[in-house]
Image (cartoon, rainbow, N blue to C red; front, top):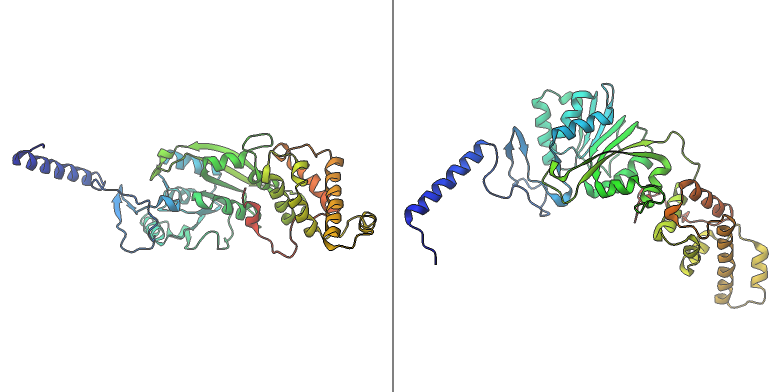
Length: 372
């Protein structure tokens, strides 16, 4: 067993005290975990606040997507690439303690910040007030997914990873009119958003967004530029709404792309020959435009209900596959098709009375990204 003289122990204790004093002078807390990954209640008033570099640092939660971007060079670059001007109202979602907000307030006419964490709201209010910029900032202390946004010209935001899909869906399909959205996203999500037909990452997410918007890559951001450090790197993308979009029922489009991209590398012929899928489309379509001559021929001499439905399904399957063949898309894979080709195929199905969306269900924007 190791033994230490009493004088040595006292000396070590004195060194520890001196080191903690030095760390305190630098604005850093003693050797304790400054961040908590646990899912504690973020509204717990007992959570301690610490002052670092004249900024109130709150206990942050990785599991809630609370990663603050701290690199001033990256913050400046995001603001510059967003194109915000002195007459613009900027929507920021998830401002946190205001690192990006302060940069935006310097150049924008007004900033509308949506933040659900009341601790962050209080810290942001204090910080903005100290700089005399309170009149330029409006804070909405609500869940961004559950509140209507007021008028805005641009979106500039470091979005919490956990709400990336529904938030992008809300922005591009929610009826908002804005010039562009400059978003800091998880790199993997951004890569999928940017993917094109033929890319290994091409997916339903990209297909749906690109129906109504153009997406460009701005820059990559290292995970080391955040506090606390996340597990993955990030990317900044810029989304611009298209001035003209195809005349298509969005409910039909979302349901159609869900069917096609369920197995994106399987041929369309294989997908639409599946018995379960044929039966699903059969009941959704209600045979409103189905060929009555085929029905009359096939149901002749059939009295059993189960046999009758089987015959209907067989004829319906022939019709579905026939559409694919006539369009020369039977052997094509969704991951290789452009939106123009997919829109063409959907129009052929709809014109033949074949539907993909249950008309009795209300419109659901989140359906555009579900299981993307």
